[in-house]
Image 1 (cartoon, each protein chain N blue to C red):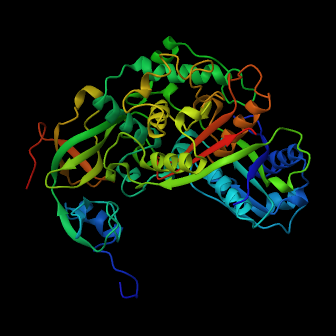
Image 2 (spheres, rainbow over the protein chains, first blue to last red; image 1 turned 90 degrees about the vertical axis):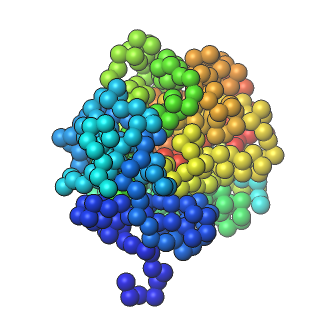
Length: 136
Length: 384
């Protein structure tokens, strides 16, 4: 960007390309309070300070909450049922994602270890560590 | 600030409208103005809410409503705050009247979605979430609230019957509300047999997609004429926000915006939860009613989920909650919901809620959430 406005460490498009093409979850770290997030912004949603620094989020973490979506939105029409998950990443940052192989409540548990997987499909995708080995 | 009153409030039957949003909004507005004893020309500002107008290829609703009312020169603006749009409109009207900018204002919320298929409607409802960071990762609106329910069930001891009792209570109330989308009671067997939409939420945990329109007229005390109905004074009009993305909040066990708005409202009104006789809260899903009652300070964390099952929040209980049937059963025409909650307060006060009366109508609270709590309005009303 070359305008006079404040610059963010990365754009939303770069965040999406990061996981779709580079296999990387880009994040932001508050220089003041250390809060880490994947969600785009130019100021910290936790303490209100800025700037935010670029960081790379860990691809590994554990599930803190999930639901099995049986009635999906339009971009996941042929994928249901699948799990929508909230994941605490190792080293900081909480992100959401989906798990196409988890099709029933009994297939997943809160606290279960998961890892990010690159995919040609939309969205941040996770898989259970117990099903496939995490890379990196 | 000037004392500001609700002098008229009415709605149509929620469910499926044959008429367009524009027609419905204009007609309920005229009826609310008639109730108030005012005339359209007394309105100083119109606040219109209509989230999905583009589905009817129509935006800029304010001038259309005002023109239809015969007051084309009155200023208007569209107020959008997802599901809390028309309570945000009410807040704007309150600010304008209490601040002395106008003497009377019209608030109208309207939505028409029944001409959309379920998939399109589901996608529309999700636009209040964060598209690249929630929706694009597979979340639907029920899915986001199901995630909150998942966290709640993990933190506290719950049983499906606790969720079911909320749905049963609100259906029982809606069965006595001629404005309601669903005017039928349901049993625990029906609830438990309903399919899972987003675990642990079942079909009967979810509000419907509804069409509907609701209008509220507010006026300064000194400008009130001879209202047809008993006015109620607005004791507090508070709004707050929280991080849009639920997962970026400190925890998943409540909506910070609701807690902050409630604290502001009680402070503004010089009241406490024990002073409230009944509530209309934002129960887009059964879990949302429990979270609301905890965020508002009526129940300790982890306990409100049991309130309906124990009878505390039924119409004849210690604290009646959603005597209208709530979003769950009265219906949820997104931009009309906040104004509709005021209609229930108005009808309870005026003896118009026949068959679903609550025991005491001195002071009432409404709680209206935008999406998953990115925004929230809390209003407190009293009789004089």
